[in-house]
Amino acid sequence: MIIVTTDFVPGKEIKELKGFVRGSTVQSKNIGRDIMAGLKTIVGGEIKEYTDMMEQARKQAIGRMVEDAQQKGANAIIAMRLETSAVMQNASEIIAYGTAVYVD
View: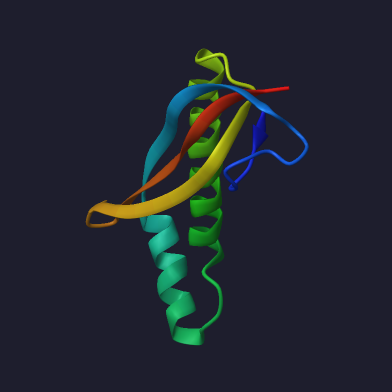
């Protein structure tokens, strides 16, 4: 699956628009991560536990978006975007979305 943030795939011709595709996941913090994060706020620096959690969430959302595109018969996704939002205290949604297309 080709995934680009542009409105076209360089060197390829869009033969068919397959439509909007998306994938999302909701991740929540846990007590183990919170303890480590609390310690990091005292000494400073990257909170690696949260960085890893959000990276995993992005991969999962993109994977679900790709599955959606494959079900529609696409071989590429153009104009791909990632967004995040808080859905409740200590929980965030990551959504990946774009336009599924078939390219030559």
